[in-house]
Length: 257
Image (cartoon, rainbow, N blue to C red; front, side, top):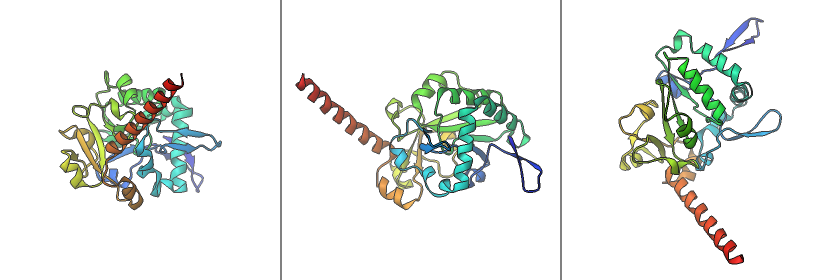
């Protein structure tokens, strides 16, 4: 938690964790960062989602209320805290999680944004281990990072779901590893034998099936761009196109030498 002075001159405590409308309905708190490549206050640019692939062009967190000036500013403040002052972020978050409001509750780490570095992910793992009475979950496209730093020794109060549509989709075993794919509608995900998590976002990590289906947000221009494909199928098509391009480049190089 941090402190600020309100209009009356009194010191007010600002919570790091919030609740959007969807997560409030199921009693989940969330920590939010900006999505994808953003411009920082100093004019530099930073990629919060290094492994984003096709999802970057279809991301709900880059449109609508996420673009409101006050919302954007709050998310950038979060990023500046955890990126530039990780020790202070860890201290504040660990302290906040001692409050009774979080006992037995779930925290979704990132309803927008990602685990952008090893250091940042390790900070969260320490926070989780210091908060045994709280439960945490996330979606992530940082597959290789999680397999290196989390999978072999996860905190007992942390669950995660890999998310398709990123540059590391190929590292996921789609038959055995829990993962989510975004479908154009509920009918399409049911037809593909995925479990619908519409009823509760927690089904992403608590459903019996490791195949988690998410109906696309009803944002007209994003629905049009996605068409009848899933994030996973769009990423596979992009990966195949890149492989073919690289193969042609390799052939031209070989002929030239």
